[in-house]
Length: 188
Figure 1: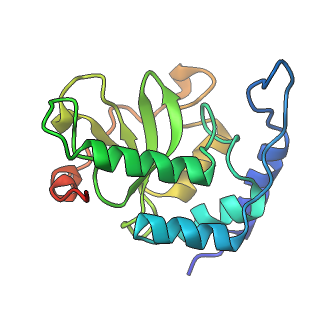
Figure 2: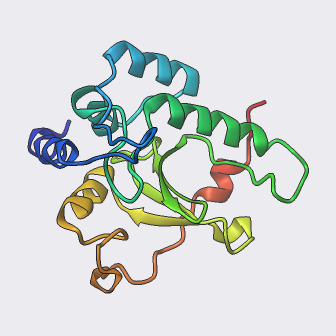
């Protein structure tokens, strides 16, 4: 098992310096962490476990509102989005793209794009869901090989969300090869 103490410390410091979007005209800080029981309830609702680092971020630092781009979703918000996306994929409309099993949306990146964590991968691969091309076969990309790498890139300002987009050295993101196999079965 990985020890993420140093990374969690760095993320905690960055989170404490974060101000979320104004609410009713005033800034507010990062929401308090959730209890371990809240993580267990989320895992029960989802039907899979969260990667340990993601659970630790929510239980030790705060329940979203900080992180890359628009910040991490609160845990309940991520679960609700996952459930809605999985249900939507059960339809017969072209916009009802099947949502991959075990892929939890964790952050809004703008323009309908989402950062998602593949909770079935050993290190919590971070995926980019980019629906704008209009083709479900070209909507999924590997954003970072692990949640730890994604958070580190955010802290260092070297990832997708670099202040100066010219600093982003990731080049073209590779497609996520597992999306078709993982999207084949939709829970109803």
